[in-house]
Each structure stands twice: as C-alpha cells, then as structure tokens.
Image 1 (tube, one colour):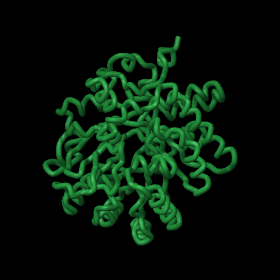
Image 2 (cartoon, one colour; image 1 turned 90 degrees about the horizontal axis):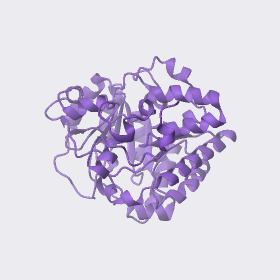
Image 3 (cartoon, rainbow, N blue to C red; image 1 turned 90 degrees about the vertical axis):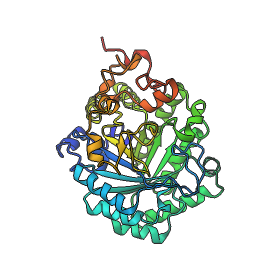
Image 4 (tube, rainbow, N blue to C red; image 1 turned 60 degrees about the vertical axis):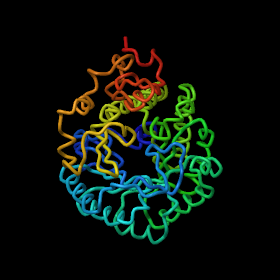
Length: 395
C-alpha cells in the first residue's frame, strides 16, 4: 500500500511511526505498513461463494455452494494461532464474506483474541441489522468495492442495481458509526470514473479510498490487455495526488491509498523532490520503513479450504494447509524454497529489477503479475512504469 494522503499530503510523519517503536502490535491501523517486525496481515477468503459476477474476480467466484470450506471450529483454531503468532489484522474476504452465516461469530472471536478484524465486501448484503452487529463486535473497517459510478460498476459486477445496493451498504455503515471506505480496481474500462469517485468521497462523507492496480489473477487474468499503459498509469497517479491534495487544501482530508503497484512510492517521491525537497526526504524515510511489496512476508492469504498463499492473488502457489499445520509453522518454515526467497527477494530478481535503485522501497513489486505475463516469478513486473533513467543508480 502506498498512502498518498500519508506521503504526499503529510498525514503521517516519520516521527509519528517511531513513537510506536514500529511494532505491529502497537501501531495504529493506518500505520501498520511501516512496522519493522512485518507480522503478516492475513487475508482469509472465508468463502468462495458470491452473489455477484465480477469480470475481474481473482477467485473466479460464482453464486453456488463450494465444498471443503473451513468449518467454524477449524476457523477458530486458525484464528487462535494467528493471534498467538502476532498477526495484527485478519481481513475477512471472499467471495462475499457476508454470505457466510458465521461471519459475526468469527469476527467477534478474532477481536476477542486481540486482532483487528476488517471486512472486504461488495456491500450489497449489508443491512441495518448486520451493521449493528458489526458495530457491536468492534470491526475496525469495512471496505466496499466500487469499480466506478452506476453504469460502469453494474457492468463490472454483472448485476443491475449492484451500485445502488453497495451505496446503501456504505451509507448504513456510516450511519452506524463504522469506518467504511471504497475499494476501486483500476483498468481502462473505468479509469475515466476516478474523478467521480473523488466527488463521491466528498458528497457521501466517505473517509477512505483504496485504488487497486489490476493484478492478473482469476477472471482478472483475461484483462491483461485492458490494464493501463505506463503513460496512463503515470497520469492517473498525478490525478490521484492532485485530487487528494485538493481535498486536504479545502479542509476535507481523506485517507487515499494506491495498492498493488509499489512503483507508486518512488513516483510520489520523485514528484515531491521537485515540489518540496524537505517533504521528499521524509517520504523517503517512510518508504524505506514500508519496504514495498510484502507478499509471503508482511501479507499472507488463507483460502476457504485452508491453503496458505503468498497473497490473495497468487493462488497457484500453496505453502501448506492450516488443516494439517498451523499457519504460524507454515509461515516460518524456510524449507519451502519460494517462501524463503520471498523473505529476501534481492538475490533472485532479474532484469531491471535486479539493479533498480528503488528495490529497498519497492520490494520488487508484484511477483504474481510477473509470473502471469512471463511465466517467470523473478522477471520484472510488467506494470512497473518507472523509466530506465528513474531507476538508474544516482551518479
């Protein structure tokens, strides 16, 4: 995650992070990316079933029952282990997690064990009754996927009325006092809607928005040709920075982040170097704390059937299954060759990544995207839009 509001607009300073000694168990949620211990934030795809038919779904979900989901008791054993291991956040995802009846029970269990529980949802099934339960549980955050305004979103989601239902869910969460935000996956079909999403944040009083770069996984693997070009991505980042700063300048600060392309960090830094060198130096410190892509290290994924993956997009690789061994054992077992290499990618990266001066702040970007396009886990991420001059060692 690259916090545009944190970095570009100064919502977080290096000293803010250092006050908490950079321990993940002590840091507030909005600073977790700067932790030094990198205890993994865990995405749990608790169910594969979904009531929508999104064209970019990384889990290729359908509205049907899937066999072999972890039971409630198996899930509690998994959560108990995660909490003891020190994982600070459990993100309940899917499919559509609200379709699973034991979501409230399991979210409450995670909170009772000291974890922060968040939900990633399409928002269409959130009712006042469910939101009241979420509030009583003490959910830290509800992220609702919107992939554009009404016509665009409904086309992406494959169901007429999906936008209106998602907006109703957002409003219910907001009225119940639950922190709620928007998750927007960027591609050529919807990039023109980004300015309208910023307008929506303001008019609907939505405090947070995450703009996700496209990762070629699941049904999203068919959209490789619909990803933005490098020039289009650069223009988008400039737009996001401009609109975020505009909100801050008018006294309407929002938490705005970009996700899944760590070239965004150096790009923000290079722009600030021209505009505000003092702030640029502070941002460089924060980027080094962040360390860039953390798949298999600071973020992990557990599927509905218990398989452990490097992240939620890299489903073709499993390090083990929590039904057979606890996550804490799987995650620290360096006998798995890929898992060991993901803890320290530097010696294994190829091409322009291997000599990039931003490697310490980018982490080699997304290995799943490199593999999807080239077949080689260690090839450069094709979505890196930094020029050869921008990545070359300083003279």
